[in-house]
Amino acid sequence: MADGLYPEASGNLARLRKQLGPEQDAAFKAFGKAVFAPGALDAKTKQLIAVAVAHATQCPYCIRGHTKAALKAGATGAEIMEAVWVTAEMRAGAAFAHSLLALDEVAKADAAPASEGEGS
Image 1 (tube, rainbow, N blue to C red):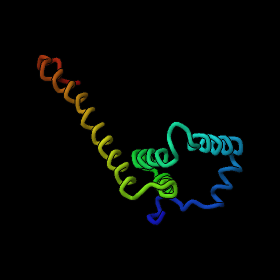
Image 2: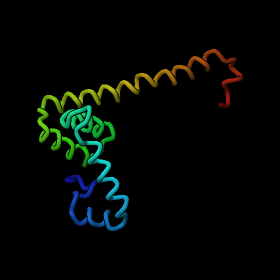
Image 3: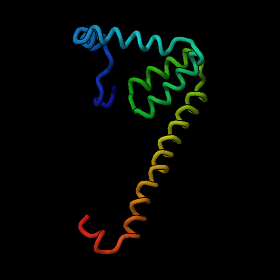
């Protein structure tokens, strides 16, 4: 990738990965093929889910690869961006929901006698 943090995906690196774990490489490719095969969900829907998850996991390779696959499966730019917005809401929603854990600790500290909360 252009920023230097991630190497560009290349045939050489893919061959090295396969060489260092041929059974695992084959199994992972077969798993991916099975997961993205048409089933209860069509290919476009599966790729839109993958675009959303790729943004949640923040994997640049997955973002690029699944965005290209979603476009190839017929997704529009608007559908892709809507999937990204769903991801943004879910990630923000997780922080919002988990604030209850912090508030629970605040409430416990407020309810505890002053000497009990010291030194913790």
